[in-house]
Amino acid sequence: MPGGDCANGSRLRVSEVPRAVLSSYGTSLRRVLLHFIDGSGPARLTALLRRLKNVAEVVVEEQESIQALCLATVQGCCRRVEKIDLSLGNSVLTDDRVYLLAGTLEAEKALPALNILKFNCTFMPDGLPTLARALASGSAPQLHSFYFNDIHCQKSDLNSIADIIEARARIPGCRKFKYFDGKLNIWFDRALLPT
Image (cartoon, rainbow, N blue to C red; front, side, top):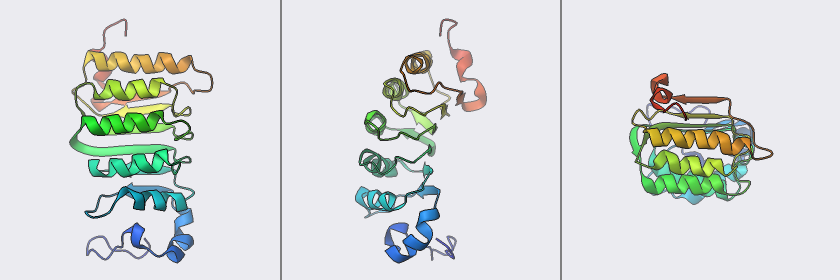
C-alpha cells in the first residue's frame, strides 16, 4: 500500500485495509503478491480479488497460499488474470497442492485470460504430468507460455509436455504454445527423439 514500509513492519495486510482506501488505490493494482499469514483464511483473499477488478498478475511465494489462490480462481475471481507465477524457490510442490492446482486449471472458464504460467519449484514424481493432463484438456485457452524450473524432470515428464502441445493444437479456440522454458534451458535435451 502507498506509504508502507516493509522493513519496519508498518505495512498493513491488504485484507485489513479499509474498503475506502482499497477503492481509491485498489482498482489500479495490476500485480498481487500473495503472502501467507497465520490466522488468515482463503476467504479473505477471495473477497479481496473479487474487489480488485484489474489484477493481471498473481505471484505466490509460499505453498500455504496456493489453497487461497485456487479457491479464488474457482469462484471466478481470477478471470482477468493473465499471469500466474508460483515462485516457491527450492520448495518441493507437494502432491496435494499439485492436485489442487490441476483441478483449478480444469475448472470451466476459471482462467479465460491466463496466457503465462510459471512454476519455480521442484515437483514430486508425477507432479508435472498431472498438471500437463489438466492443461491438455483445453483449460486456460489463451495460455501460450509455460515455464518450469525443475532440474529433476524425467523423460516421462517431457512426454507430458509434448502431449500438451499436441492436445491443445487439436482443440478449437486454444492458442498454440509459443514458449516453453526450463531450468538452464537444458530440460528438453533429455527428451527422446520421438518426443
